[in-house]
Image 1 (cartoon, rainbow, N blue to C red):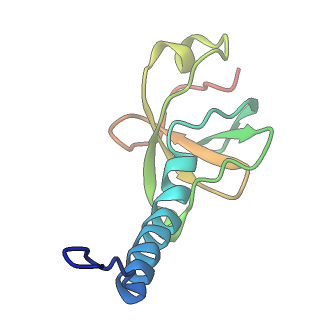
Image 2: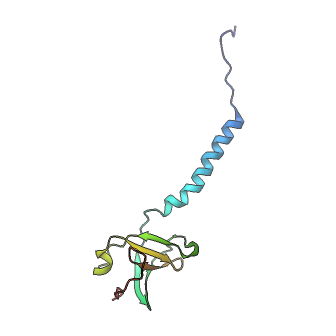
Image 3: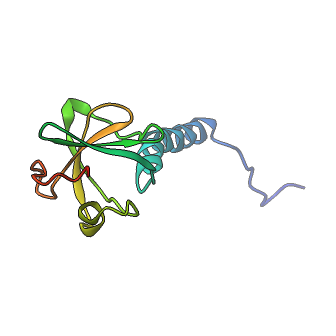
Length: 114
C-alpha cells in the first residue's frame, strides 16, 4: 500500500533555469576575477616623450576600452620612484604596454625610466 507516500518529481524547467543562471553568472564574473590581483612581470620601463611606458613580459589582460584608466600596483622593480609609490594609475596602450600615471591620473613628470 502506498498510502501516505509522496511522489518525488524533478521540475526540469526550474532545474534548467537554475543551471542557466549559475552558468551565466560564472561566465560574467570569471574574466573579471581572473584579471583582478593578477601579477605581471615588467620587462621594461621607458620614457617616451611625456609618457612613462611599462612593458610586461606577457599579455597583461587589462581591457583598454576607450583608453580608460585603471589602478595598478608596481613593486619589486628596484627603481626608487616606481617602488616608492604604492599605487599608480595606468592607461592601456596595447596588450603588453601601459602608460604609467600618478595616482591622480596625471603624467609622471620625473624621468622614471633611468
